[in-house]
Amino acid sequence: MPNCPECTARERKKIQAKYEAETAEENRGRDDLFKLFDEVEIPMKLDSATKHFICKRCGLYATREQVSDIKYRLNQKEKTREDKQDDYLEWWQKSKKDKELI
Ligand SMILES: [Zn+2]
Image 1 (cartoon, rainbow, N blue to C red):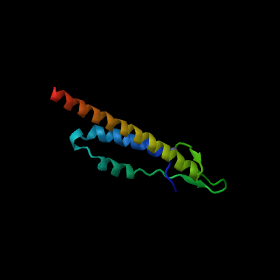
Image 2 (cartoon, rainbow, N blue to C red):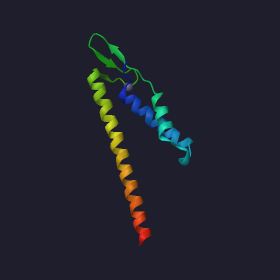
Image 3 (spheres, protein in one colour):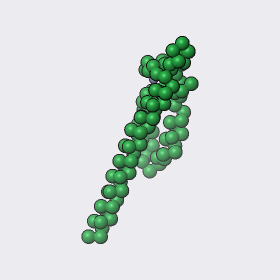
Image 4 (cartoon, rainbow, N blue to C red):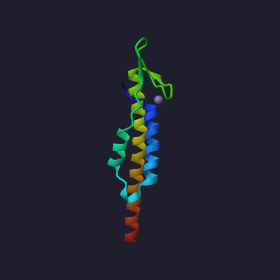
């Protein structure tokens, strides 16, 4: 059964907030966080009559295609946010270097 994409994303956000609250910044690792993310399991139930999956927690009702579509879109959102952060970091480090030269 697929995991509910909406609930999984929400749980992951909670896990990330908890992880960041409990772990000092220098001890944080992306892999540790991903390991915690993998433990999130919110399986949906299949309604065999309509071939739709139902999430008992949030009530999401979708076909397998829709489930993967939502999952994909949520992943894209995460990714763009991280990419932006990387760009910012790069810009910041570059501007720091430039300042040192002056
Ligand atoms: Zn759900």
